[in-house]
Length: 346
Ligand SMILES: [Zn+2]
Image (cartoon, rainbow, N blue to C red; front, top):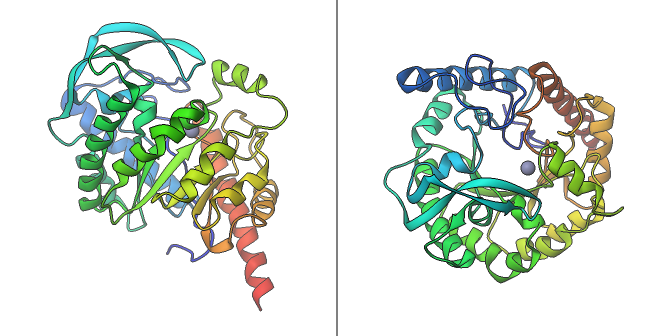
């Protein structure tokens, strides 16, 4: 049963089994193909569900066992993007990457993740969350030779994401999460059109909607970037007031071991907050007390009935055992605080 207070959740990815993709490697190619790949992904989802359940996670995700990359796997299924035409562009204003090219009007011919989400729905009685890339982060992962406007392309993607989200909702998904790490980089665009595009993606949904904004996985390009950001990371200060006024229900942020001043959480007061209490850039497993301490400090800025203990970001690059132990630490830490809150009430 889902606890009324502090339901735990992961942001997105978990390590993949070695028979599905190379372990401890980000964006590792599939080891299977065709029908074997579909079955392999489903088996991996079964394991992800079982491990999350066994380790006390309340809101269940697919552990991103169904995708190779959190952005491009979705884009691969769209018309208008040529994956053979590669261009090198600067991603997140941080590192150069070879990316596909937008060559015509973008269009979703058929659902992308809906069958996978239906499989997840059938695998657990707990609430389920499905992650999609956010419009701005999608734009930032492509070379656009057609629209030649980040805003226009984002708007097209938002429409497509909304179609997909509505079908995910119909398949029984309780929370639809959009990953927008680009919101911590392009602060002017967030104001100009980023939040509006995100709201377009969420339009008309009865399922809860979430946006995840972080400082990235623990890869070198990200840790190098973080080293340049100074003693206080205040990027959320720009986006949170806009999100507080937006239609998005849940804001997911990075917290533990990051230099984000915790008081910035106050800026989304009234929204649910998925608070990162697990570091995804360090293999050291948090103690339950550390997790509880992070959550306890956050309670000054978020109402207890709106706090969702979570990870900072995805855990795909970790050794499996580390990721699983971190799941246990997360739920044990949440349990400590849940008990404290119950004691305070009697
Ligand atoms: Zn993230």
